[in-house]
Image 1: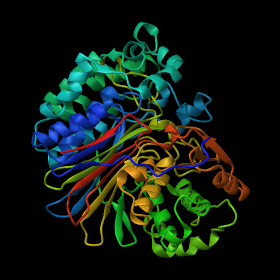
Image 2: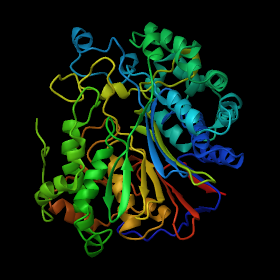
Image 3: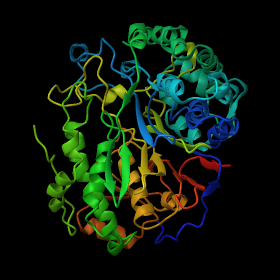
Length: 538
C-alpha cells in the first residue's frame, strides 16, 4: 500500500466545438464523430451509448435502463428523462412466495423482471432533440457488433469472474465465451445478433424493439428459461419526461434526477456540507474523508427509507432536499467519532457519459445492467444482455421498495449537471458504481468548487466508498491505497471500519466530467483511469 499520493499531472482533454467523455475509447470516438457530422449532444450520446453496449457489454447495453439530464442552450432549461423499466405484470409477491423465495434472485431469468428502458429513452430523446437520423447515429455500434471489437481489460476481468454464470445460458456463451473460453484482452469478438437488433432499431425505432421481433425473441427465450416478462409488458413500456430536482451549493445550482433514482442523496449531502469551511478542513485530510463519510451515512439513511417509485410511494422529496432539513440533521455529525444514523423523517454495473455539442447543448446520461452482465442471460438471437435491476426490489411489503407489478425499482443511476451563479451550464458529471455514485459526485463537486481542481485531477485523486456496491452487502469504509496510512489509521481510530483497496480500485467507479468555464467557453474534460475510457474534444 502506498504511503502517500502525488498530485496528478495528467492534463484534461480540451476542445472548442464539442466534447465527449465515456468509459471506453471507441465509444468516445463514436460520439465525437457524430458531433463532427453535425449531430446534437443527444445524437452523440446515443451513438456513444449504443457503441458502449457493444464494446462494454458487461457494463451496459440495450437490455438495461437509462436516465438523462439534457441542457437546452437556447432556453437554459434542463430536461429530465426517466428511461427505467417497470416490473412485469406477473411480478407479484405471491408469485415469488409461492416458489419459496425470501428475496429476489439476483441472477438468471427470474431476475430479469423489469422491461429494458434504454432504447425507448434513446428514441424519446432523439424525437425531441435529435438532428441526424438513427441509421447514421447507430452505424458505429452496428459496425463493431458485426465486424468485431477488441475485448477490453475490464471485459476480460468481468468475463473471467462470470464464466460459470455465462456458461449457463447458451446465447451468453455464444456471445462472450468463444470456444467456451474467456477471451483475452485484445481478442476480437463479434455479436451478429446484436448487430441485427441495432439495424432493426435504426430502421424502425422504438417500435422495432418494444412491439416487434426483438421483444418477441427476448420474451420467447425468457419463457423457455422460466422467466415472466411478456410481449405485453414490452408493448406497454414508456419513458417519462420529469422535472429535475435541485439545490444550491456555494451559489452553484446542482441538478439531479428525482426518484426512483437516488439523486436526492447528493443534494442532501451538499446541503449538509455547505455550512462547513472545507478549505480550512483541507483536502485529502482525515477530517475531509471523515466528514464526507458522515454526510453520506446521514443521506443514505433517508434514501434507504424513502427511495422508490413515486407512482406507488408518497416521497417527501422537497422536505428531504431542503436547507432547513439539512440544518436539523447536521448537528448529529460528530467530527471526532463515526456514528450510525436513522432516517430523519419517519413513517453495479453502469456506464456514464457526458456530451457537449457545438451549440452548447449538453447531455449527462447513465445506462446500466445493474450487476456485471446483468442477470447473465442474453435475449436469444437478439444478442442483448438483459438487466437484473428488478432484483433490487424487496419482498417485504413494509418497505418502500417492495415489489409490485408495473412498479419501477430503487435505482442508483444519477446523471448530474451544475449551473454557475449566472445560470450558465458549467459542469456535466457522473459515474458508475452503485452506492458510490453519490459519494463520487460529491467528491468531484467539492474538488472543483471548493478546491479548484480541473476535471481530470478531480477524478484522479483517491476516492472512498462507504457501504455496498455491485450487490455486495457491507458497512465498511473502503479506501484506495493511495490514501496515506496515517489518514487510514486516524479514520479507523474514529470508529470507521476501514478496508484498504488497490491504489486504483474499479470499485470506486468510472467517473466522467466536462467543465465549461464561463470566462472562455473552452471545454475541458476528464475520464477515469480506473476504466478504459477517455475524454475527446474538437
